[in-house]
Length: 140
Image (cartoon, rainbow, N blue to C red; front, side, top):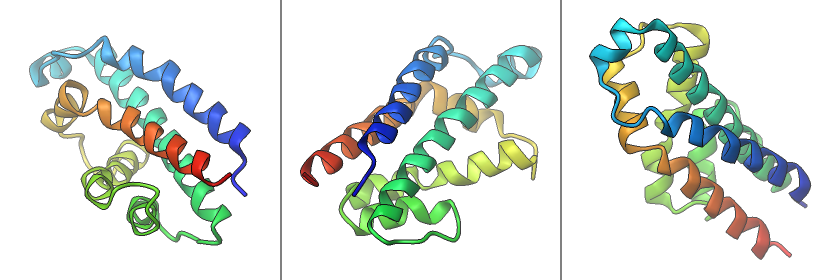
């Protein structure tokens, strides 16, 4: 059974961090290029939010007896098991790759991608939380 207390705690953390990223809505790639502090804030904020989502997703799957090899598979499996709508899972599965790029510095960060996420996709984190809450509520 899903440890709801753990999931609630993690989703509360997400609720805490998202407004801090929302403050940067409207930011442009050139602003990030010229302001290292803003770049670091956005990178770290996204890293934390993505990690929370991955941790929650992994926990939900583990409680279903599903073991995940790679972070990117978490979203696909959540879609397969109707925790997330498949279309939404497909849309957000790139989060895992972005997290890896930020954490491991595999490549330089695409500033258009970062600003696109901040300006257009932060709501996906909230949607994820809503789907998780629906899923764990229906497990009762």
